[in-house]
Length: 432
Ligand code: S3P
Image (cartoon, rainbow, N blue to C red):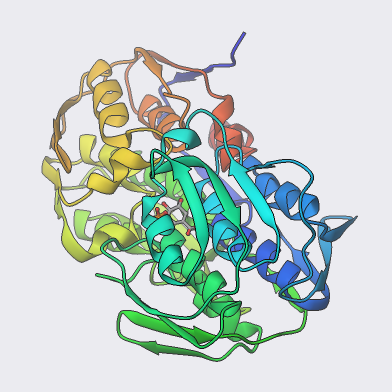
């Protein structure tokens, strides 16, 4: 039987927690350490299924990896030392694994196939296939757009590419291809997506030129280093939201990444009247981190979310929809059509299930409209096999009257193993 989560209404959350390492940064640490020369140590890596997909693909490409306690040691042998894989590389559910590795594999001197699970096989890949071909890559996709991706490694030549979508996966795919190509590769985005690849490359000593919405890179070997992975703000977002909507709550989340390309969620919560304090700001491996203190409120108000902020909150929109249900007045989300091509169609998934809980919420082509403040009532809801939808619905259940059951919840491990235990901890502290 597939596991489910049963949630009762909770008055407040209290306590101090730490969330697991950032998923996006963990993928990049694994990949860049494998491309480096010498030993790298990765501390605080995310143990989520998506990151295991990247790790296993790299092992299948001949990368030597050792576990030492909680740390991971990677022995890189340079940009072109990967071995031809004996079988197709399984990216599981992970779009980041597939899109980033495609950039690297396009420049190797062997053939490879990248495949994925039933959800990943429905996700668009034309967005990387087309620009990679401009660099000279030989790559094909099912119906021109879907996995599996078949790649015949080639010598690549840098180009200038202007991407129609603000996507860190597209940008990072091309940065990886550009890192292994002759000449210079320049990528321009319509608005800035998360910049973890750029920060990590700089940390590793690879010279990058960043000008506004453009970044450019040239081939450059580099050495292994020590990586510290900050807590994942996209995972923290579920508890930040929960504490914000439950008046009387007070929680602290330690050592969370607060990279400005990821903190749109905090900016929007502030606009909605939430009380989130950022303390003890510091930097590790080129990434800003801090401790967050969140105090609950019953004064939240609706807001309009659109335009340039969307790439900065792309993974937080399902949980923002939940916050919108608990805020007075209208919350309108626009320009978020990208959500329809995530692990599932997240607009349809979250709107249809929040409706089951009694929310006044309507689906729009590129977002949703919520009339907040209507009391939610427990019901049985579906996860659509999507980790962020599942966790967002669980948080909605905390504020709903009666019992909420979320079905098919093992997908949480895609990004956040330990989510339920941390939630239990915050509930237990409160009842003491
Ligand atoms: C990611 C980029 C985003 C995000 C995903 C992780 C990354 O995807 O939604 O969860 O690590 O680069 P897009 O590049 O498709 O926007």
